[in-house]
Amino acid sequence: MNTLLVDDVKPRLELWARHLERNGLSVAKSVSASDAYQKLAIAPFDAMVLNMAMPGGEALSIADYAIFRLPKISIIAVTSDRFFSDGSLFQIIPNLRSHVSETVPVEDLGATLAHYAQTQKEHQPRP
Image (cartoon, rainbow, N blue to C red):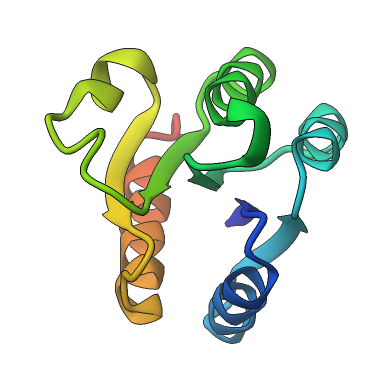
């Protein structure tokens, strides 16, 4: 599964990337919106883990662009507060599959991505 991690908190980004790579995922990292847009423009990602608190309020724009470029991308939103705890993100981002806290254990994040990778495989047309 090709996964894009978008987070301006570099230590967390690196921790998540190392764990996911050890578990067999192909991971690209972006610490800025502009870098995320560039990567989304050229690579076929299956999933994206997106920090909703990106500087400049760019997270929703990144999600919109990802869905435009890759209509089947699974998005996992990461938040640091309860602002979206009412589930409104699921109405705003159609491809949102999960909403997790920034303190989510990395193992849980990996399991969530593995689940959606399996779900995508099950829904692939068979030859």
